[in-house]
Length: 462
Image (tube, rainbow, N blue to C red; front, side, top):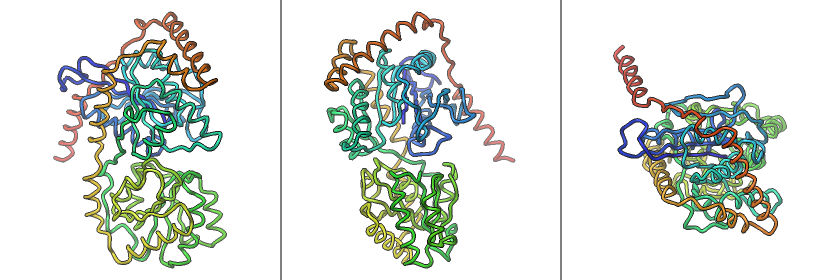
């Protein structure tokens, strides 16, 4: 996913942070109304940066009828760009097609730092590339883990090497993710920081009365893709249902053909319930209906879903992969290898734990609340922005040197692309000078907060 964060130093937007302020800009292929960990990360990070006195702008592609410029909670401004959407809500590579509109947005919003999220987002790579051509600072956050042993990963890693060879700083969501990114992009580990994800803990409060006392309910909330271990899930469910007659499954996910076939073949209609694709604000209402949360991912850099489940007081069962072992303490999670027999063992262990009432939901919620905070994530991200602002923008010849080191043939290709991009920028500056681009006014954050407070007071009084 791509996320861009732009910032400028100058008069603060709302006049309450001193002499300087930052204007973060988040641009991503993955943002609401699409659901996922990266989408949640961008939204909550943006909200916390607004609370810290920054003006925040999100850039993503259009979702159906949601196009143009929209404002969401607390004045978070979102640009939904018109674009064709390909596999898993990512835009296809266009190389230079987005440059004109991205340049206008960068100038219009007075962007100085572009922050890209997710290696699988072509929009992310293109935005960082064009931002460097314009002399802007850049940073990148990686949310996923990738291998080295197939053609897709080799090509993806080469593209990542191209992007990160000319970026000011890199952020990873776990130490495992940092190690993976450093190896894939041949980075200096000192140029990579680890800032974990978080959740809005206040939105994931347990409800001990919600689960059905006649059943032990196992909740699965996932995209149901191969990377999420859908094949393991298909194999595990019939075995668990055969062992425990009072266990049932509650599954959220849009792509579930294999699971529906399994339910038909094993006659588990009363034990496996599908609830479609749940919106993020409804996730808590689904989680609290369960006793156990099951995650069968084959690879994860962090996995916000297990934190949300733990905050709701569920016993978590997860595969021991990627950065998941860094997410929760051992007493909150039962680990299993990404293998059918071991997953069944871990689920059996969790079921027995629920039967013995070893988990105290409110106590577990309080522990999670102490561990994760979006305010902390925003503060640490802000430190990165200040750091990159102190870095001098390299001359174009230095950019060519960095790209040339990306490979015997790829390096030459990347240098040609950089030269074309610079010529394209010269053309754009002639065709639509910066002076002709209207500067966007800041959202009246303080006024908005006062109106919300007055409305809240009136509602409380009535």
